Length: 494
View (tube, rainbow, N blue to C red):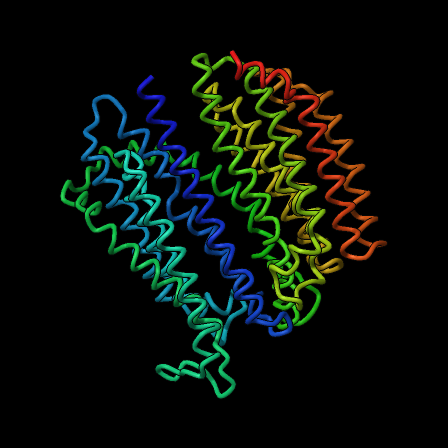
C-alpha cells in the first residue's frame, strides 16, 4: 500500500508538471505567430526545424530511458554501473552527432532546403544533442523518486524560454532597445534567434543537473552496454515509427509542395500554427490519463483484469469527445491563440483533433501487447501507420497542400487502431463496450454538425450560446448514463 501511495504521489507531480509545462510552452504560439506574419514564412521554418528536432530526439535517446529503468532494477546488475554506462553511451552518441553536423553543416543545410542559413541546423543540432543527453539525468531523477526537482527543472526550462521570447520578440522591439545590434532598422528579429534562445535554455538546464552528472565517475562498462543496446533497439524502432506519425508531414512537406520554397514555408507555417490548437485537447486528455492510469494500476493487482482496461477505453473516448466538442464549440475564441494571418488553416483543426483522439485510442489499445511482452507488435503497427502517412503525403501534398497532411495523420492512426484491434482479438481479447462507445460517438457527431452550422449561420455571440447548450447537453448525458448523481451521493452518505 505504501508503494502504491508513493506511486500515486509521484504520478500527480509528474502529471501536473507535464500539463503545466505543456500549457506554458503553448504560450509560445501566440507570441511567435503574432510576431512572425504567415506571409513571411518564418513560422514555417520553426515548424519544419522543430519537426526534425522531435525526430532526432528519438534517434539520439534510442530508447535508453526505458532501458535504463529496466536495468537499474535488474537482479545481478550494479545500478551505479548502469547509470554511468548510460550517461557515457548517450553522451558519446550525442557528442558524435553534434560533431558530424558541424563538419557537414552546409551540405546538410542545403539538403534540408536552407542553403543560405546553415546556422539553423548547427544551432538546433547542438540543442538536440544536449536535450538527448539530459534525458538520462532526468530519468535518474525519476528513478531516485525526486519528482519535485524533475518538475521544477522542466517548468524552469520552458518558462525561461517563454520569458526570453517575450523579451526579444515583444519587449525590446517595443521600447526600441537594440542590444548587440541584433535587430534590423525596423526592429524585426531574425528567426534564428528563436533557436538560439532554445539552445541557451537547454544549456542552462544542463548546468542545473550538475549533481546528477556525478554518474560519470562510475565509468563505462562494456558488458552492460552490450546488454542494454540489445534490449533497446526494438524500442528505438517503435519510438521512431511512432514519432514519424507525429512529425513526418512537417518534414517532407517542403520537398513535395507544388510551389516555390518560400510559398512552401508559408503554407507549412499556417499548418503548424493551426495544429497547435489541438494542444488544448492534448492537455485535457493527458490530464485524464494521469488521473485514470494510477486508478487502473492501483486498483487492479491482476494484470489480466480485462474489464478494467475496457472501461478505461470507454471513459477515455467519452471525455476526449467532450474535449473535441469544447474546442470546436469555442473555436471563435480559440482562434485568437494564433495570429490572424494563420486563420485560413483553422479549417483542418477538426481533422487533426480527431487524429489526436485516435492516437489516444491507439495508446490505450497498446496495453495488450505490453501485457504479453510482445512489444514488437507496436513497432509493426506504428511502422505500417508511418508508411501510410508518408505515402499519402507524397502523393497528395502536391495537389492539396497541408490538407493532405491532416488527412494523412487521420488515416495513419485509423489503420494502426484497426490493426491493433484485429490482432488483440486473436492474442489478448478484451470485450470493449462497443455499443456504448458507438452511442457517444454518434451523439458527438450530431452535436458537432450542429456546432458547424451554428458557427456558419449565427452571429458569434448567438453561436457561442447555442454551442454552450450543446456541450452542456453532452455533459448531462454523460452524467445521466455513466455517472448517476444519486448513486454517487449515496456512496458519500455511507
